[in-house]
Image (cartoon, rainbow, N blue to C red):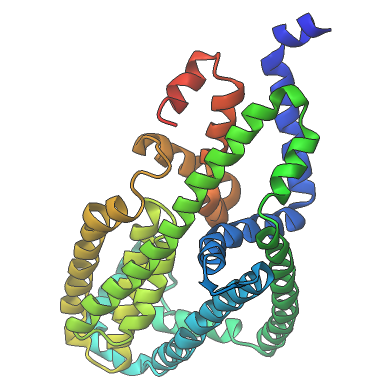
Length: 367
């Protein structure tokens, strides 16, 4: 039996990974709670350890209190972060809703006529229907009683689900922070004794690399939001904080995030200019926003990322890019966001357990 296992080690490993993948998919909600809680614990552990070093005479800061305070601080930061930006987003939505469609169509009448004629020529638009009429008809069909009732239902459903999810994550995070070695003990219990050393190395490397990655990610997002906000405010863009917030958050997605953020920043900047009737400034606004985004993206790549991440994932950029594209095709935006840490963890496992294969050594030689 041992000889059979040694010959087909890769086959059994693939079967094992497939079984794990099926269980992760089947219990995806629970797995997502655990993963988010793990990220929270990776970010919160340094703060817990810092509080644990506090000594006043014979008094030592209680570990339980350090864990509770850490969760309170992280939760307060999360709530404060969004409570600051939600009113700004509402204001931005009000500006967009105040757009005078008639005035806009009159200003660009010649361009609209030219586009209409082109669409009529290729058979997309009927001769007796204008672009503005078609757009208004679509909007009226979209904005209906059913839409509002459905929206209200979704809001209540989301609210209930959100608070349940938040409680679940905080509950699991509490025990991860309270007992940092709990996951290690569970994993070692499930693994055969002969793999104990390899498993410990996997857990140690994962904790070190992923902790540095997620803390760096948080700092990078914060730095990007501040940089975008300053740059957009300098050029006088309305709703600069909203655009900066979205662009900073979407920057979590490597490579594609800056492109999405730039596109949405330009769209939001244009709609704001349209809402206040400054149609002649649209071209200038687009160029200025594009310039700000290019400058901040360059600063991020040249200064922020090397300084904050320090090549934390230790993988080639092309390698990471292909992984992100593959993850995006499987899991969309969420897949792209978790692609890098997941790939890093799988590389660590492969490095420890499958290092006899040349392709594995090639992909993990920097770990």
